[in-house]
Length: 92
Image (cartoon, rainbow, N blue to C red; front, side):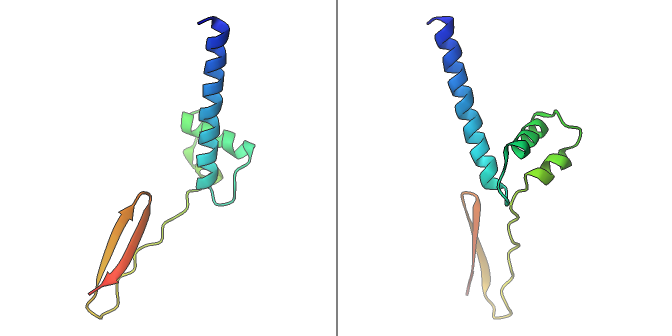
């Protein structure tokens, strides 16, 4: 394999990884993500910024609501985690 082909392969793989990372960061943010915000999050995750709080303010993770306890009806709260989501239901 020549150096040109190897450089092309590395470039294409790098662009694919960057595209997937951008997609995941855009899905995690509540208000969408522009290129400036994405570059700020990348530099924060790589350790190039002074404070991590600055990057977290740029890309905010959605907060999961706290599980509610069932009313005094004697029921039990049953929670099941499926992937990244949590499903809770009252039983009893």
